[in-house]
Length: 287
Image 1 (cartoon, rainbow, N blue to C red):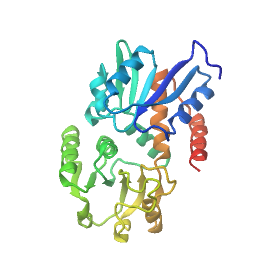
Image 2: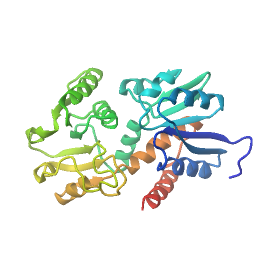
Image 3: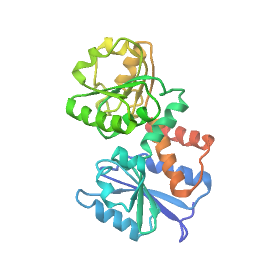
């Protein structure tokens, strides 16, 4: 692509950003859609987030993604925020508006589209969610919003799980999420569950780490979804498969949260055929 005065810029702000795959997603989409757009990562030092957002506005940057550790902190830098992002308390996408940026959270809908693409349903499901951090919090909102029958939210510290459960249950107007200490996982009733691994445990290079190692836990899992995508197959996924379940990683979620952001920035719709092209490039990059 020729870069000239008509080329628009989008990017990622976070710390660190050196290993991000987001440029591959967005630059491939721009190439395939024939758009004059480039996407670059911006490393933002602690304490300089507000400067970075104001600088992006001054430079007429079309849109930004936001990654750790700024997904909550960035809210104070925005002129507007989408209701979903406000409820979740985290923003990962900034869309240019008059006088600043509007914040969105595409992680939740990205996960939902990823699950649909793998034939995983949420409505009516009994779900075990591991973790209560930022990513898991968005997952809890998703599960409640999409009609999960019950979500057992397991976290090392009970108070964090209780806070997330209270927020989600109040929004859903029902007791959808049950907070539990991670150590109490054996108290989950017998049955078959969709298990979502929402922590950073098992992230490369700590490939052999897992939140729960007990074989009896995995006997309850019919499908496991790990938000991690590097390594390609986490120990959590291997244990799910070893006990007869299906298991998926988070690469499809990464893809779709990026696609939704791209669609917001450019007012376009990305076809599934183009999404698949980007997905194959992401797989190649990881391998």
